[in-house]
Length: 166
Length: 227
Image (cartoon, rainbow over the protein chains, first blue to last red):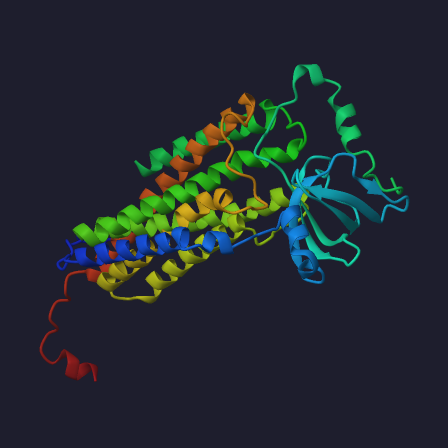
């Protein structure tokens, strides 16, 4: 009621015979986890296809909205003079899929970096990208002393990405 | 203890953030953007950790009974929910300049969103049940089952291909980046742990009031008069 009322110590729960529930909940949790991990959901859940998967799918990939993930192939980046068209190839070391995209890519975009592109395969074997995402690795490195003119390297890595506007 | 932990957490977070912002060098490719890692990664670790502690309290609440476990269960659920929400927001802020998108339904992001929604669901369940005994029991069962998502969040980047990168390790992170990561990891742990202890006290008091001693029997005739 008022602030001066002293609260009683919390009473011990009378009915604490819930051990069977604890065991039951644990069983359900472990069973659910087992189903998820051993039940093959791992194989059925695919976030993106690799270039080999897309190649193997053949005509099935044409027209279907899919995600293609892999590495940007070395020397494959080309940007049109107007800066609106961006072409590059995605590879997994075995297969290569050429990708056509529009717009300015994220700053991290460069050769050898991971990308996930969303879109569809066209009949001419080019992946038409609607959404370009850069996927970076788990490495975080401080610039080494020998790389002091680091900016030069950074600028170089973005060559070909600059739109003619800037 | 609670206040002490909060103070320790604030000091650690301030020093870790200072180190991360002003002492650690820029990352080679990401530049300053990478510094959000110093809050994002500690937030992620502690969200999973607090959920794990909450699961432990839920188990003990069922196994041993006792309102202390229930109070700490409630507090830790809230802490984990706050950290999960922060985690998603920080991740989006980091993703926009690096990945190029705020969000995508990749396995790591999706399972993390599920974790946040599960925590909200359990908290909603708790607030919807008036009987403390039932509230403690039902929410403990819900927490134990929802906890399944925690290892899935952790392993999602290994089990499935994803946009999110794999866990980093000291081998993949330069030394000057590790100091602020560790300081802030313990900082978030101390801060949220301290807040959870204080929040558990509030929860225990509310439960005590709910269970409170039966009211004095009304004097004869009181009910008639009230009519």
